[in-house]
Amino acid sequence: MEQVYVRDLVEATGGRLLAGDPDRAVSKIRLDSRQVEPGDLFVPIIGERVDGHKFIPQVIAAGAAVVLTSEHDQAAVAESGNAQNETNMPESAAWIRVEDTKAALQDIGRYLRGRLTLPLVGVTGSVGKTTTREMIAAALSAKYRVYKTPGNSNSQVGVPITISEISKEDEVGVIELGMSEPGELTVIAKIAKIDMAVITNIGITHIEQLGSRENIYKEKMTIQDGLREDGVLILNGDDDMLCNTKGKDGVKTIYYGTGINCDFRAENMNLNDGAAKFTAVHGEERQEVVLGVMGQHNVMNALAAMAVCSQCGMTMEEAARGLKTFHGFKGRQQIFAGEKFTILDDSYNASPASMKASLDVFKTLMPEKRHVAVLADMKELGEKVLEYHHDVGVHTANTGVNLVVTLGEACHALAEGVKSVSDIPVVEFLDKEEMVAYLDEHLEEGDCILFKGSNSMGLSAVAAHFVEKAGLN
Image (cartoon, rainbow, N blue to C red; front, side, top):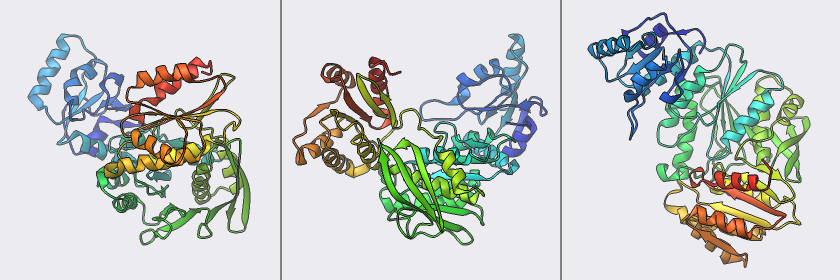
């Protein structure tokens, strides 16, 4: 945070300063007590298992400039201050009393957003929002200094922190807006107050919490609750639920995709050893685009980026040049190639759509080699979880892989899907260590191996094991 003081936080939260210097500068917002450094603001979040308030003495000892609290009064703070003086702890931290620490954090996010003048692009969707965010940032970087969401800080507590870290040198921001429950995206969008909103697609991720694609669609459209009245809504024109959607009154709607209805359209798509190449068409303009990442699904992400760049005053050539600099990131379609193995690590997360897309990329890699698909359970799919896994199993078989290895209970349905349409061998596991032992014994030199599953299934560690084993790290 730049030029933020304790008094600003009091104003932002409507809280009461219980102790400390209102003119003390504050550097960063921290939720994790273990990360607190001198000058930080510590926000104690009350979780299901842990109440962050219990770590306040620890963060003050670490030099926190200010802490929020919804549990302490002036007497308790005075007592804490006396104890601090007796133990020669660092300069006394400021204490701000608020009704709810999470709500106060969101208030701080709104306050800091109000001090920013740069345009913000918000990205949401069921699948691909992180990759789309990264590709938009890469494309924009051909002309601008770009701030982008770090990691997966896309939640009700992550977005305020993201906004707090935007500097005065940044010229445009690209932030990811997540959602896992009804009403959450509205809260986040109103904090971010974006100038452009990108919706990648309407899938079935979080259908367990939201009940249907229709409900997911309604929730995703609430990104407009924080979109400025003369803003821009950028939609996937190939998505059956977005292709006929219009933005709210006053908002400009732009479509991207492969259909004639799309303002930014891809033609002549082809793959060069998995990497995508296509012609981007916008009106009378045509631009050849070569991506540094694999899969035709990334063409859609690139088109979203080109639409954003156009609204930021960039040419298609500039956007294409920026896109070429993006080469993916950890756990998302990373390729490690060597004599022993070729590994496609796509283990960061999984949904039916992303699982199929990953398999489609996988089948284009070194077709002369044996292909082994290591697939783990997909989470948060609701009542149709087994149906979705079975469908992915059928798709897996149709890609022509040579061996399928599964991890998890739901993947039994995936295995049955493979067997229903092919004779491809399938080996199932419930225990990750047993699966690793099997792969250690049965993988052959030269194999092409895909790792794909929901993050909680832990395939990233399995992929890392075989990357190390092949000497590819």
